[in-house]
Image (tube, rainbow, N blue to C red; front, side, top):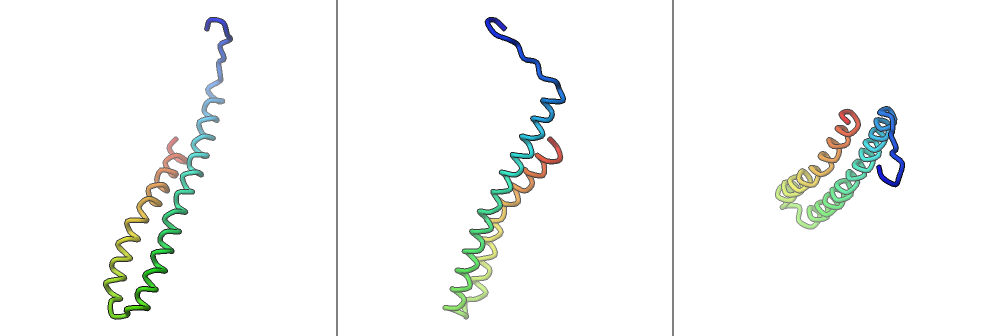
Length: 90
């Protein structure tokens, strides 16, 4: 390098930095599981309120709620899978 020093890091140091970054990313990725959990709690609460108001529509409300919860859970599952990949593969 012109005008400066060249810094060479050992492969062990670089591997440790990469592992630390992967673990940090996995931890931050698991925070993504909070959003679906909170959203599903709100959805279930509203479904219970709706069944309380209209008990005869219970099966329709339950089916719609379960479909919505399945869609909402995918983001949590994807973040979990990515976190596992960061921990065990990287």
